[in-house]
Length: 430
Ligand code: GLV
Ligand code: MN
Ligand code: MN
Image (cartoon, rainbow, N blue to C red; front, side):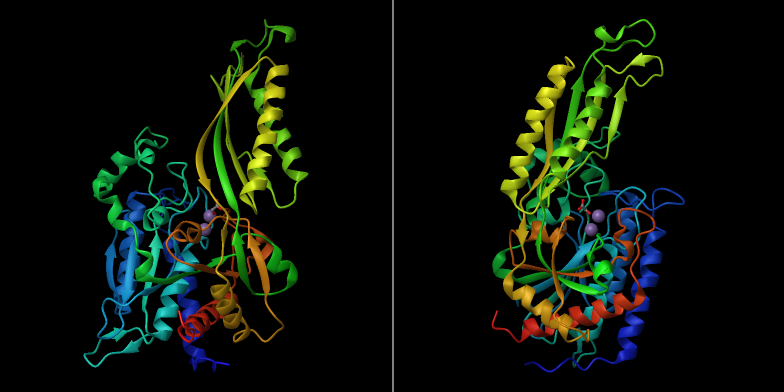
């Protein structure tokens, strides 16, 4: 068995404090005062990339922003600039009214792992102490807040870019293509963000759990076994707008009532399934006046499951039920799929090294291995390399909310466990 890393306890404790204070610093970079919101290709995105690049350079890393607006830092193997890289990362974009740790904590933990592991070079610089380079990627769009399609940044790195996405529009009608140009990126060069499998050793990501499992177990860290498959749809329900006073019930074709019944049917169908969750997070009625029966309603559906087949079977059941609901109410309905990501399974070797990293850090029995219902950049970069994830306890399981939390002590354990995992990986013949 490999000896534990000889890490200075004070250095790990101060690394955790730095992660916490930098999470606070990044939380101040927001488009909305009094709340946290940083979306893809926004001025806030540019600002956090600049900050991350500064922190990467401070560690002796060479930095670049790639063709999809992801911020990268790299610490080479001395004398071997073409060595394969182990990538560690997460994302800096947020949902609306976000917490301060989703994604951000993982990027900052990655930087502290590099700080603890890096080795000085003879010329006063820093290098990777392993046979592989260490790269940190701060992904630019995991949430999909602005364009509805999640994982844009990591899909570009995973070589999965789809040219249909250029026409996606934000709430102001700006297309993704226009937003790229506005940000100073060239859409024609998007392919340059893609990484080659031959250049990568693997990808590791630390993330808060975004669920209550670790909190309930009273454990700080877990190994992730797989990441849920997801599909997102925009649903449109069409009825007829009419006078709210003059229209008797037998003449009404109320689109909002159809949408409401759809939301309840989605809950009923998903609840009956193991590991399937469906969420209607957006619901709008048009024309949106107190005295007009809604003639049109738009709602979103976020559907997740452990396995793609189950998720798709449930979507088919939902579609059949919506046909019935809308038929009874004499409404028309349609669905536009805006995001689809297959389930991703963490590589057994990377699960093992993360498990070893936790065991070397936390004095307890074997750590929990849990399935992630939340989506992560690891899903998209999984197209070009093996992925592994470490979860940190998220008190009360609350995330995508300003009360989202992680303790400094758990961050200290997470940094140490991830550093140990990297060292374990270096001892493996990969
Ligand atoms: C991202 O956090 C997602 O799972 O939607
Ligand atoms: Mn999130
Ligand atoms: Mn996240």
